[in-house]
Length: 280
Ligand code: KMH
Ligand code: ZN
Image (cartoon, rainbow, N blue to C red; front, side, top):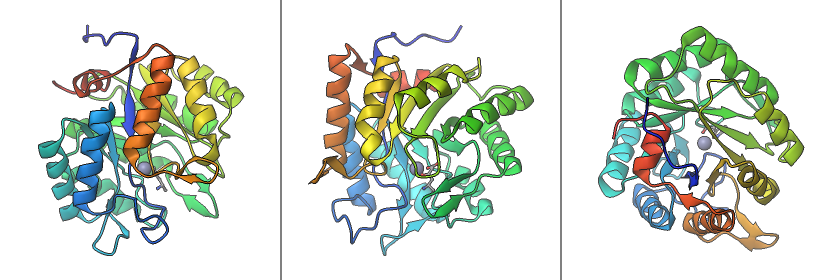
């Protein structure tokens, strides 16, 4: 049997940048490689174990440039112990073909969103054949998926995917409920309970993320259900109404503090690797 991680461990994933916020609107958003590495190091020191990465170009615009992705994975691996998870979601404007090629950068982990969802005024496209292709490529390359579930339909689709194609390498199934996206499931405790009740039996661990004002309610509900947390400036830019986030580390520190109150201990990167079925 795979080694167990103690039940009190809290996996904190940080999503420091995302693809939606502009540098002009939020100068403290880490968009250069130097800023990203510094943010990742601070977040690791604060208790994060996984970094979910979107890359920006020289103009601070989201990009899936293959060279930049590779350089970013290498820099994060060299300068932190964090599990490096590349986003395959990219931005709502990225073509599916380019999103598949993210895996060429050889991350430890990749996000896989389990279906199409309205995303504010945009559409975040994840057609079923694309999801199947991305999952099979992750299996072939030994990349640990994190399944992003924006809606109850995505939860059901995860079961269909695992039934059809089997388990990820490492036999661990980790997913993240992304709640409060305008177009997805709301960031509420009842929605979380419904989604968790519908998780397929193969799921071995789950986290939750609340976007914007649902950040704290979702974090508190997730902790009350013994789950893990994803936090970061991809998901929220204020600490509370009218108070901007200064750094991603602030959000990690808050997650760790909430976890401490719930008698949880931050998972180390080594424990995160075990949770995700990655080799030590
Ligand atoms: N930027 C969103 C359209 C992911 O990283 O996989 C999608 C997203 C999900 O952020
Ligand atoms: Zn993302």
